[in-house]
Amino acid sequence: MKELTLADCYGYAGLSGEATNIPLRLEPFQKIGKNLTADQVVDLVRFYFGLPVSNETDWFSAPIIEADPAFSMVTNKRELSIIAMALLAQEIRVEESQHAAITVLVAHACGKRSPAVYPQFVELVSAAAKDLSISHRRAGAAKQIKVRALSKELGASEEDLVPSNDFSILNRVLKELNADSQEMDKFLANQVSAALTPIRSEMANLREEKDMLWWLIGGQSTQLEETYSTMAEGRAAYLIGAELAALCSTELGPRASGFLLNKALREGRSDKMAPVKIDALPKLFTESEIGVISDTSTIDQVRDLCFLNNALARANDIGLPTAWRKKYAEDNSLADKTAFEPTELALQSFREALLLKSLTT
Image (cartoon, rainbow, N blue to C red):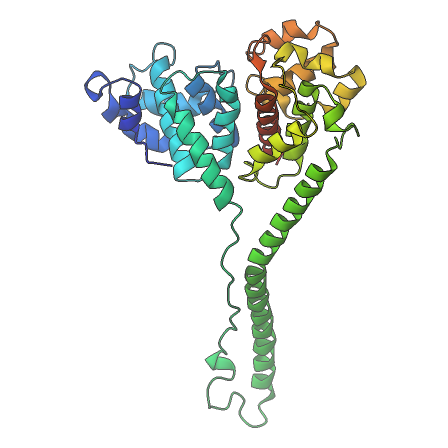
């Protein structure tokens, strides 16, 4: 991802340096950007998209207000989005944060939700996500195992360690030899473990690829034990996205995930697929099925972002067919009449499932 400085972000958002207090933002920006938590990254995404933030935000506002008492979280909402965008860019480019990238993409909802400033930033994040999905799966170079050199005090010198018949010194040397041998064992174990790490990583990648291949060949839902090709398009799209995500070992999934989703969805279908509205998604499942497929463990943290899973979770909690929609509307989720092409629905389901899974680890 190309470098985006704080000043660049102000410029892309249409605010010139003369019209803002960029010098007063630089030090707070660096302070805020240190050791961001997963929850704080989610709130930065909310700031960027102009969504309400219900969590405590002193971690963000206090450093800025300390440098500029005139700053207001209420009247400077555009600046909030700009600073949040710059922090997210830093997380993705410098820290190589998959979590930041996937959260931005989930919130964007395949273009159905517009950010508050500089929409082209999402395109940069999407390109960076593709690069990260490759780099985080690349196995490291094999490391050579090294043996620690022999201690000069315990055998590497030509001098006698124990004078003749001096058993007290002999006892001390034996204790030192015992301690040193244990240290050498630890050193060798660490060397072997480091050498095996790339192999373990490669094996995990191969296992993941094998599981995905068999999933694609099988063409059947692992949760509902029903063939995707016989399902309604929206029903299949949601399940395909969620079940592919369950097989992923990284927060972004493999580079070829889009191809896998489309391949699984189009298998056995020749006609043009009709769009699916959010409010129609729960109706594609029975109440018992919704109880099986809906992820409620972490949905409370991201109901506004993971709207597909929120619709199912609300339907599971409140009931079908329409009673859930009032509560859903209060969650700041995407409008329930928003329509998605089945391919978009599968991709959004996939990304939401990845984000929800990352919040549990």
